[in-house]
Length: 315
Image (cartoon, rainbow, N blue to C red; front, side, top):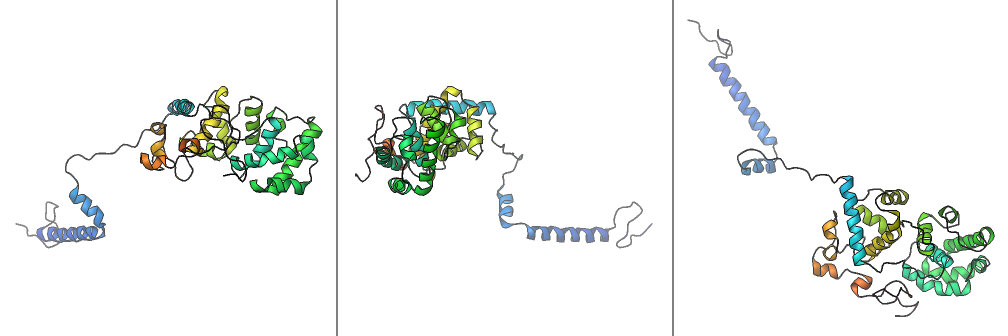
């Protein structure tokens, strides 16, 4: 008979009894060390985990481009029912007044512009009159809109360009409008869509915020946003789509606290829940006519259901 030597293998090649004991002790020590390194939460989870086959949670299925387009167009149809009276919220009587008002609207509210322009157009009713204005006098009139020196410089420049290059008339082409001082694509599209009936998408802060919340695009650059949205909707919808989206952004889908619980398109919104979801609390966040308050225009369209805005210094 052969005898077993501690720590060595027998003829069969398997460990002897002492070798087995040493290895078992080593394995037990390693297991205890590993357990000591395991977070408490993981241990507790392991103890409470139900027995049986493991389940794997599936990630939400990504929305196809076609599905997104269909959802976007449905949102537009829903907004058309909510805001059948959507319109540009700047007071104007002709293309020149709309151009000037839109330039003034940068970094301020349309209400403040509408309260300022009556005195401005009384003093300078035409491009020729405005081009000849004394800068300091114009600055004083438009001071309430903020950045009044820069805005006065733009108004003087664009008025002189209209007088000298376009016979005192506002051009009806985007490529001409964007050459005027202080006029970019957003301003040009506002003028084209509302003074000339030329379809255009107006990407202001409200429009950009909402189309990103609705996952139509994740682009930040306004020109890129315009291009993406233009590919989703027929050209005939561009101008009114812009008004509806801006209306919704100003009244319900606010930047800081959207009124999700009072939103008519909540079922179509992938960002539902970013704002107040309680219906009663959400209703208190509604603005302008949706909240029973005056709108931004002193002279709103006849079909506007809200109250006209007060003139400067009134109310």
